Length: 165
Image (cartoon, rainbow, N blue to C red):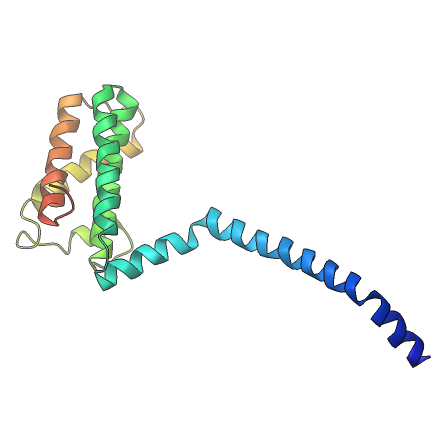
């Protein structure tokens, strides 16, 4: 009986290997798909290179985001202008988070910054209040000029961090 099982297994071994190979490929494909979709590796690689100082990934990413903000401002569309202000604040929060400021919210992190660290922190706090109103009050209006002024406030801080020219 045992000889029959061993014989049958040996005759069908190639079929088992082929089936196992295809199952492995399918499962590996799912793993790769979800890693890419969730951007698990991308952020970790960026953080790793930022810590080592081997690449200027944060600066590149900030410049790309800054160009997107400038493009939104040029549209003169109310929704795009609001998004530009909100994105600018989000980028600033990401910068201070990566700089090591602790806190559950952006406001908690901002309270830790002094004017010696960011020269226009008072203006940023005022700009943040307007950003909060934009995010929480759908009817809140902001003119293109006001949005440009707010973004200029953040721009000065970005320049101090060396992220944009």
